[in-house]
Amino acid sequence: MAQERSLSDIFYPPRTALSSCFSILDLGPNVTFELRPQYTQMLPKFTGLEDAYSFLREFEEVYFMMHFRNIPIDVVRMKLIPFALKDCTKRWMYGFDANYITSWNDFVGLFLGKYFLNAKTIKLRNEINQFVQLDRRIILEIL
Image 1 (cartoon, one colour):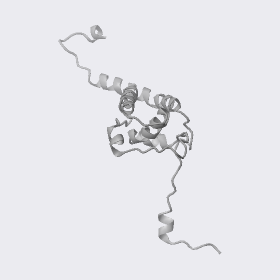
Image 2 (cartoon, helix red, strand yellow):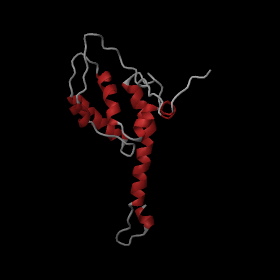
Image 3 (spheres, rainbow, N blue to C red):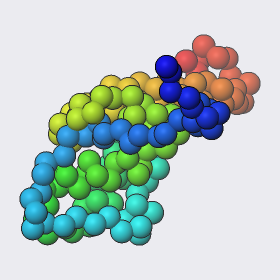
Image 4 (cartoon, one colour):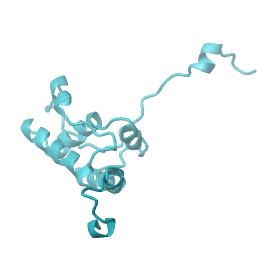
């Protein structure tokens, strides 16, 4: 006979935590890594509308200010980046399988492949939308 389930079990199934898409190096039992709230608040935020290269540069500036003893910089980067991604970029990151990204360079390659062209397209579209003809010059002279 089928097991009876309550309506709350049907409509509100238990939530299970998914593994991270980042394959992060095991630091060993004697090394502790703590991310304090002030670290995550200092990070730049990326929603997908900003310039991807500028975001990565600003992200690097922030994490280079942080010092963690005996912890490789790639581990710090991959621990911090989920806190900097917002909205559709966070959903993009969640779309990867568990342990899919094995290094910071892997992430940067995937990230720029996805968002660099998008940011460039948005920038060009904004430049076109904000185009103004001045001094009654002929448009062909401007182009």
